[in-house]
Image (cartoon, rainbow, N blue to C red; front, side):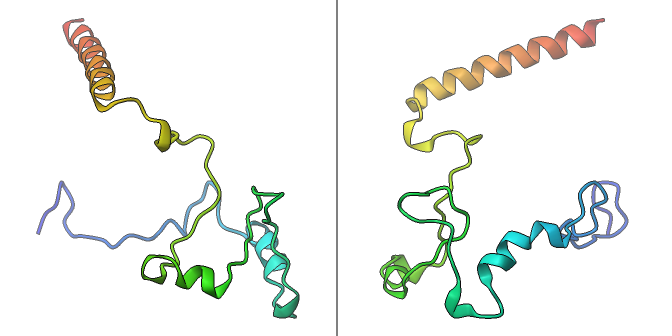
Length: 115
């Protein structure tokens, strides 16, 4: 079977073999320190109501069970580079901005193709 020029389908490698920035122990040091494998009863989260940008947070069992279907899909950190989804413009405005960007891109492609 040929897929887009490939002779066979290869499974994803999950980028564990990346050469630009391979995963090393130094990437996990903060986690290991907070996880405290030597004594799990002395774990110290870095998140609390005063330091809400802490990466390691403890959740009470009751808090997790109260979630929809006891979901463990929890997050509390916001990526500042991401769009604030709670304050998006109206859909009509978004559509117009997208169309304007597409028109601009198409005009650039047309200019390049006529050169």
